[in-house]
Length: 364
Image (cartoon, rainbow, N blue to C red):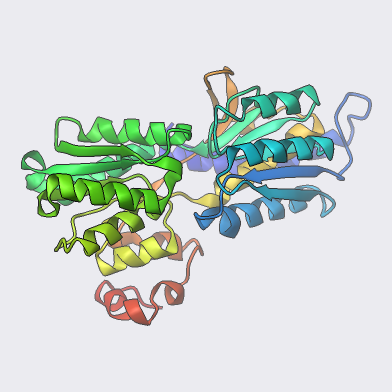
């Protein structure tokens, strides 16, 4: 499905949802829930990446409120990158008898037992952002393999004619995150055979400090001046990587990729320290998760809302909504994160970055 069609599909979900909810009012006695008193359990994986609590949580809360005439509520828990804690949080949600659960798994495989417990308690589960294992009922995320393709293409573009004679470092995400494997697969599809990969790491827990330590090792092993570029799977790690390069005195900095369009990363892009990020519009993804959750809580099928059926290692044909992504560079900051209201020009162009912003025409 191309990006235009995906955007169209996302755009019609609200109207499709409205039709479904209007219809359910006349279906008493058929197992369809007509009450707006719905409790959604929301479990997010960590709070180091700004997106979860700054963007995803508020959007989900707002959408749940809209779809339940302000009578629904969201019960929230953050696992802070602790898989065992998240499993306990699911248990608490089950004991509290929430009507539906939205979960972004810390460990997609390890959470399967908790998902099964929810299923046994007749609580539907929406996998959000990461494809959790176990009997989940719906899934929404981005086209994660395409994320890797976008990153890999951007890095090759930055390297230009130097690619064939250069070597890079690959800093992948955590092995516990299935998205990391998809990012990695897409990136390798672009990079393999076109540039030498001098060192490659799977970064524990996606932590910037672990990426920093890995990068320090790569700089010693390869010699910093011989590293022509760095594939970083996300912005947090990119920050750790760039800090390691600076500390080692590597100048000029090689192009570094990223993902999530975090404010610090956008500012690094403005300053020329980070080459690009992947902008993933959080609002459509979070809205889709909320809409799926309310439909499932009401006992209504997802119908036309689902764009695709995705298979996990444990469950086949999961109704899914996939949201397209955008390569974010200096050239399109104003037309993406600023236009969409993610950040204002004033938030990006603080005193430290004012001159850099003016140089690229990023002004109010």
